[in-house]
Image (cartoon, rainbow, N blue to C red; front, side, top):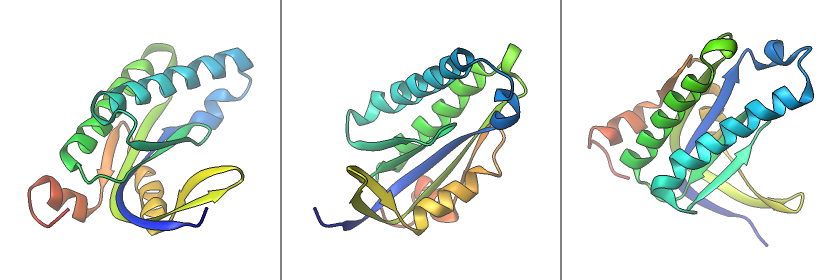
Length: 153
């Protein structure tokens, strides 16, 4: 069960103001929102990637790693995720927003705590990028260039 390093795409989704919003809420209200978000992300990524992704829930967000460099499909899925989650957050939940950061780079798959996970600079960078997004997607210059057909996957 040794580790392995690959080049992949990473997306990090996170809810803005979730901690403040969840304060004083009943557990079933919080659970209901998290289930909606999880189902939404699984649906938008499931359309194009049918099981070829690593998906990890991070409390009020998610980390997604794709080992296949399918930049157009991955970017579209991320955008659909932000749009669909933004729709869920309208109305009673409008104090919340979603951010998404996308990177491409080397990540290391490890087996730890009884399951696989990924670590690496690309993961950290995606996590940091999403902090700047408010119902939008932030991406690295490398991802931008790939979307425009510049650079190599």
